[in-house]
Length: 167
Image (tube, rainbow, N blue to C red; front, side, top):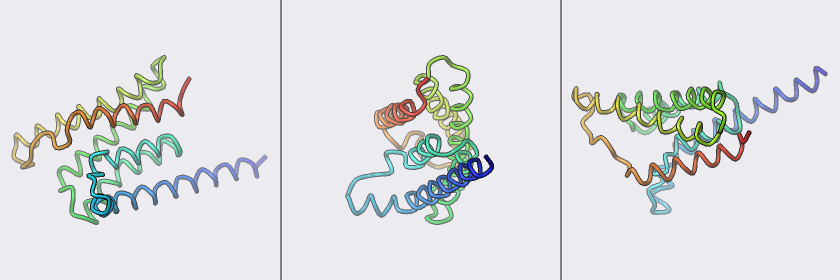
């Protein structure tokens, strides 16, 4: 019995480590990938994409780890995003994880719970970003990625999560 539980723990740990390495490598390579294929890959929200994969294929702790470290890693490696925006993204992704687990455990239907977790985390992000812009902490526009693109990626990510978490 100990061997079976030990192998399950090892498998989960290995999957988490591979997911983390893949997430960080992908975040690191997004500018290069965008340049090589001549498409703005950053519009598909690469950090949320990797977070969604972590929510499906790893565990809650690992999802939080990625939510907090991907923006920091990106800032350290590429200088983008700037520190205040890095904090905003880390908060947004962490709220997404929190709401995902809260809503999927509380709501009868899985798809709306998943969709709402993403939408509410985006609303918190934009509220905080608006405040930072008003206080001149950020010198940027409120919306960088077109709303339609955000809606499409939100629905696609929600469908992917729904596929794996159907009740």
